[in-house]
Image 1 (tube, rainbow, N blue to C red):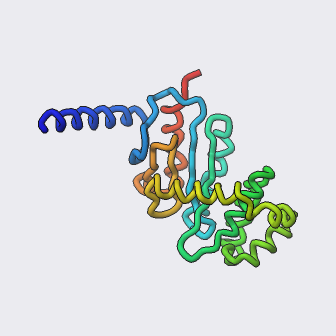
Image 2: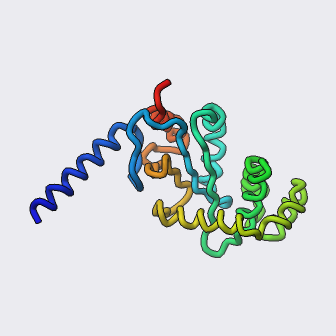
Length: 203
């Protein structure tokens, strides 16, 4: 028993030291890469199109996403809360496949927060799809198996990462960023490049 406790202690210290090389406020939800070993950082953002904090992060991170586009793979993972229809997620994934995901993401948030329209209403989503010239693709693709797989993967991620609210940002599938500890969304956006810098392989 004593030897087992010693082994656990060694592993814990090793894990903490391993993660300590990477700056930022986060909890580990998987193995953290060693410093300067990542060619392109994976930045997953679990979000909800009706979440005001997600909308705030969207606006605050526009410049960040543009500046680090070559070094960071920004992956949006929309989710629903209980009672919400998944039609906006289906429209987003169909649009993403056509290279129009960013446009639809912006339009969904704008519709919800600038016009105060319920984007979880399937009728509204049908209207948006038509107004954006995506109605035929949406009707043809939104119920196909690949979209169902996307929705299932998003659900799996919420469980894997222990999601309790949105936005939730996970870097490299292992660092669940504690945005609250940064003090504000704006401060998080300002400081998270430090995490990128510690992960990215040096040229």
